[in-house]
Amino acid sequence: MPSLDRRRFLRDAAATTALVSAGGLAAGVATPAHAAPTPTAAAAPTARRKGAVSFRWWGTAGWRVDIADRTVLVDPFLSRIDTGLFTGPFKTETPLTVRTDVIDPRVDRAMTVLVTHTHWDHFMDVPYIAKRTGARVFGTLTAYHLGLAYGLPSTQLSAVKGGEVLDFGDHSVEVVGSLHSRNPSYSVAFPGVRVTPPPQPATIADLPEGDTLGYLLRVDGGPSVYFTGASDVAERNLTGLAPDVAMVAMQNATTTGDYLPRLLAGLDYPKVVVPVHYDNFETALQNPPPVAPTDRTRLNEMIAAVRRISPRSRVLVPEYETAYHF
Image (cartoon, rainbow, N blue to C red; front, side, top):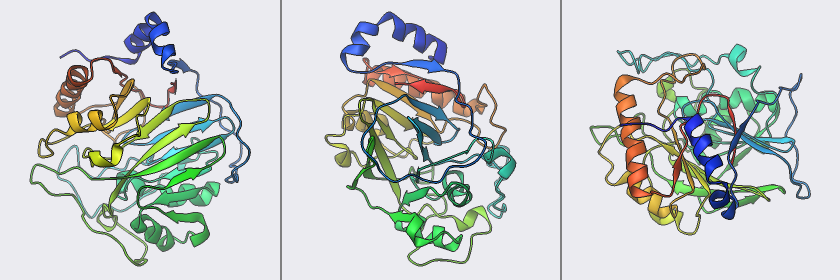
């Protein structure tokens, strides 16, 4: 099945500017912003101000969002360590090795970090990033206790459950209760929660799922964007969100019934759908994003399904570290 690449998306978007602009949405690509020479601590909420908003995909479900002079990170996982997940055998005892040489050039600042769940490919780099930038970390109670285990102060950690609407001045974040995807055995890898601070995690198995959240980012004068971190959905929690853009994790098994129909209907059929978590995230962060053969088939099937379920939605298959403007 044919896929829609970034260039075709932008060409089609340009051809239908009137239609897209009528919904208050613009799409394009800009050159990546230059990193500041030193990290900047998190800023407190201030009066609303407008500015350029860019979205850069960091692979898996990770994003860097720059809103004027402030940065929001979602599930930043840049170390991309090899666990054997894509090549076999999968090694649950793989040590958690944070690649500061990869992170530091890309993370010059951050105001907030939004964590969907605490598996290693979503949370592993978060404590280091929070210490480096002073960013406040939002996540489940498990994320809170894991943050304490890594030595982050409680004043830098915010436990959320779903339903919270957090105002940051020029943007807001609504927390949405969600679900983690199931594997072919109807199970979740590394299930469990942390209700007290554990010893500092040493291996990937020490980072459990810890419940799963979604986040709706609303930018003042800009787009509303929904971020998923896993391919399941509690669609009743999506009522009224109606984002312009949805970052949608690709399903890797068919054990979750009607995943895309329920998700897209719950989100009121977003104008733009961006597949994420489709790449081989245990390789270097280089374009084109590497995709395992079976995942390529799933990605093409996902694109075809989105076009069938929500024919007015545009599908943007992102490339790494490319600035997108919605």
